[in-house]
Image 1 (cartoon, rainbow, N blue to C red):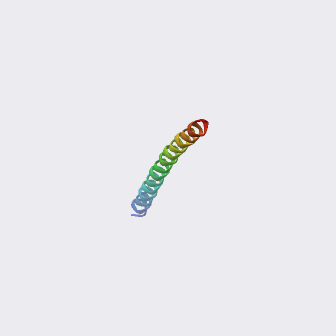
Image 2: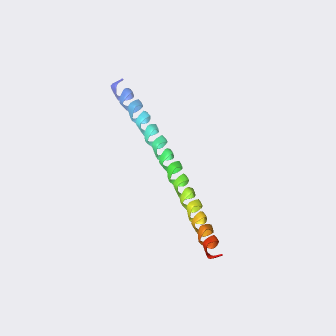
Image 3: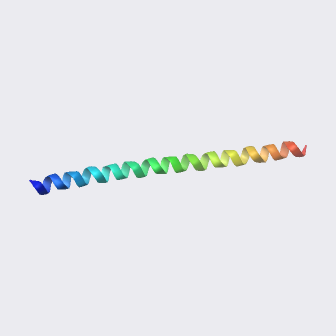
Length: 51
């Protein structure tokens, strides 16, 4: 019985870790997307400044 409870706790913690990893990946993807948008805006700004 104790072993079963321990295994259940391990599964719960592994699920929490997986969820955290997915959240981190979403955040990193969003950050990359925003950096790309910022770079494009900076390029547009430079192009407008040259005109």
